[in-house]
Length: 126
Image (tube, rainbow, N blue to C red; front, top):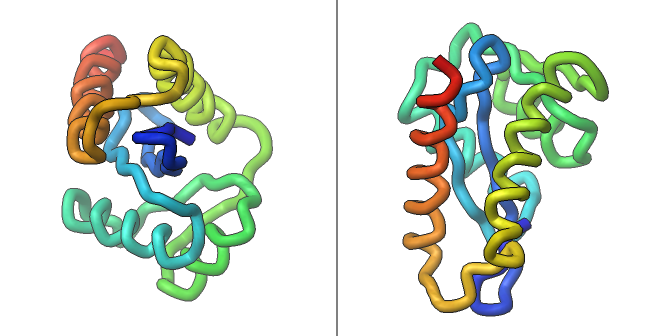
């Protein structure tokens, strides 16, 4: 979660478990089935997702959306998903420099920072 002007936003992200590269990040004001669909739509516009296997945690809104929309997925508590979680912990660590808060920026600015961080992070994976 990241705070903007005192409001909470949930960080949605996709990471390639084979490379640990961040594929896409986005902030939403809530975490539910609809925002999950919006994120998947954004991700689908960037990547071909037909043969992708999503590795997800047990959040109650993820599996139903993936199943309803015909995506392949596996719920994992260990293994590759933990490697992906480390990427998000790094984002949290970096944003903690701002106390998880971008207090005087717009949502677009925070998302641009996250995208810039993804580029930096990905450059260090190669």
